[in-house]
Length: 596
Picture 1 (cartoon, helix red, strand yellow):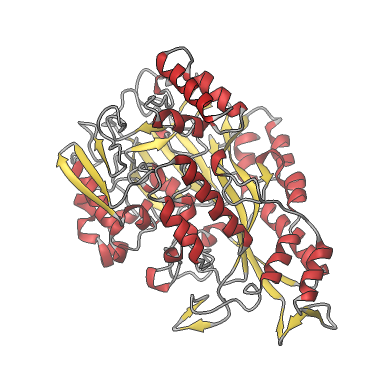
Picture 2 (picture 1 turned 60 degrees about the vertical axis):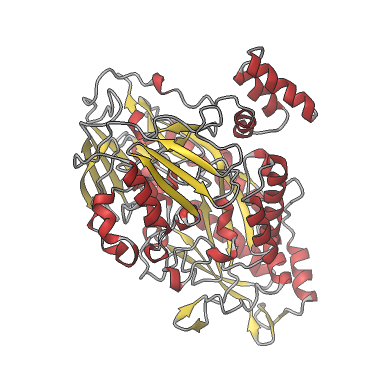
């Protein structure tokens, strides 16, 4: 179908001759994603149809007992702007809320906003230079203080201050955020901004109470008592937090939506592993929800057979990948390992990088470990569809890998390990502890060993690997290893924030307390130029082409994509829990309930 044909269909939707669902269905049949179809309609002035909250059945708040959650990677802090891992975002989401969130079709759902900005209602500027948010009236913080525009403006100031060292800095640093009145905030961008729904939205958008954080902005940010004892606007109030172990909350009696929340209390238990978490929901029924079930699919199917729970899959843009360190983790410069001032002794050689990619058997990882929960991929950017490169490919070819290394001068020694100029191909390969990742490590190690690369496997407890503790040497942002593997969640149906993690100015390093998003220390001038251009390109087709090109630059160098992963969670059979592949598991916690 050509461009004019698509425009004719959009006109049919506007005129009522074609339903929104029918249009989306036709676009999906053409190979486009549902979020992309929704974006085309929104850009043409057709209002989005987001998740219907009227499907919520309970007729009163409370009475549901305790909602028991099992997060085997336990949160270690409860400030969402310091959350370097998804687990800390999720723990914070119990108490804090954004202005809006993303549903599973990539549509915005208002949370603390009274309505969604659009060109039609005059809140979104056609030139992409400003957006106005209207706030819900009558919302209060858990301590009874009113929620106002002052809190929204403060949150932007807090995150944008480099001394705060917030991981959300990139979403706020170039904005001008003004209070129009107590329930209205205006954001002015320094340039035309095609993706305006970043700040104050979803995982990066949780609002902080000014009256509790104002004294802890900048250099004092880590000293705020509320980092461990949150006061939010969410459906549950803080009761107790034991970092790495337990979060407890009780029902917020002043919650701003009727008949919510259903449960009287909430417990988020940490610890254990993904398999025991799956068993506790799917087989024994001890818990209501188990998060992030990175478990072999064969095991999940066996546990589901008990009939006490179900596995839910939500595909968004999450990718499991292997990073090749661009810096040298074994050299210290000015008191910093893996410094940007160093280059990795082996991965600075394109032949070594290309060989490692050929030694990763993605197809076997999918077939024998992940099954329905992951799809082998050559791309880091796996959605929405218009952003996915069709020019990339992957192969498992140990013989070709050996030939590349041999031609580049990496010769095998008497012990079978290749070396060049006195440098041996000995790599430390680290990731978090769970069975699929350890099995993936074993597959890569075996193939690499045959090719003359010696790999030392390092498996770190998830609570440590994904910790926000800047003093811990084993966290993934420190990257004191040659290779590391994890999943990065794409928590919005636009790649602007997701792809920011490869920008040169986002390098995780000592001076920003390792809060930068660029963990690999990868630097590429062409990438940076493309990224900056994409931030002002209002033509969606041209902008999509820029992100496709950026993805191709990334996977050419230090990133080895493995799987396009689904969000995999386990739920008790009777639990109703709206899920989204574009946001946190707890994105709409207020609407969770159990059938009678």
